[in-house]
Length: 181
Image 1 (cartoon, rainbow, N blue to C red):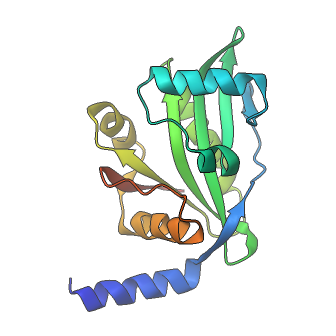
Image 2: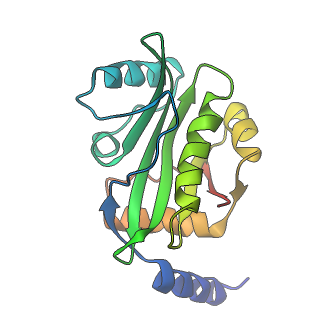
């Protein structure tokens, strides 16, 4: 595909789904799932869980703009998910959700958190996207291959998130993946 055709495809996609600002989406939580803020006592445990899993730590920008969801079992955080939401063309029902971090110590908990976000976006009336920058590791490829596919629109959405704020982290060693809604 020529460079001009790729540019035209991006322009048509961007004109229809341009991201205008970061928002905090209210979604229905599954039983046992807690939405936490940086001031919440479970947040420190969530950050420790991320470091134990050898994942990149959350940046100050991700801490401030992401919605953080955790599963707590007997006072211990066993799984967590950080999602950044951006509004599409100032329409509150249309969202782009970017999965920033997903970590789990128990099998299946990561899928539960991801399905919770996916189900909430499917019920919205506007156009919604759920994308991620999946790490090129064996464990990440195994997890994401069942749930998402590599997609050029996901790359474009990541670029638009970066255009909103230069603090958004674009990683070069990742695959840009879109999850079907």
